[in-house]
Length: 216
Image (cartoon, rainbow, N blue to C red; front, side, top):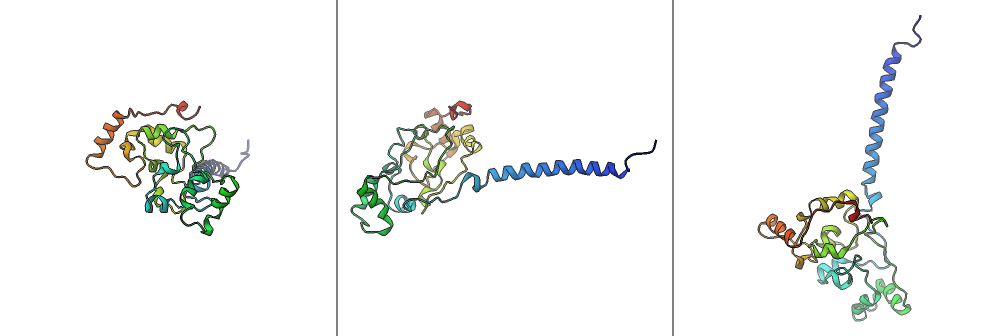
């Protein structure tokens, strides 16, 4: 019986199979890369706000404490967004005619809240509690990045689950004394590893990787 297919068909079939696997691998790599890109995570992306609020000016230059604006961060899962009243506590006295602050004054006159855009906006299926992280000695900048250097606020990290697990797997690496939780650019002195391990024991910090910790 004569051969139906030419011998070169075997080479073509092998090339097609290996080519298909190679293309599939490229597609998987491309999808994973895109998933981690700022296009999807919005990391390093500055979002439009009703007023271009500068943390650099208010925190680094004026020395405002995070809790002045984010009033519920120590007691609640939500850190809180400052009300117009908080802004006007200062700006009814200084920069009273600055054009850039007209939305704040308009909000004060009308009683309608400013519609700030959430920068660190987690999906609805993720539970995050600011208060417990503060109590455990996790600094604001561990998650929010160098906020004191941000003239306009952006998301420093991806907020992907793998990023959260970097801390939840080994939380003692990120612990600091509670009195420095709200301090920007804090650096440990002395034996930092020993200090962090001692604080982890003192604050009862432990690795928490069970799904139900964040997905409730």
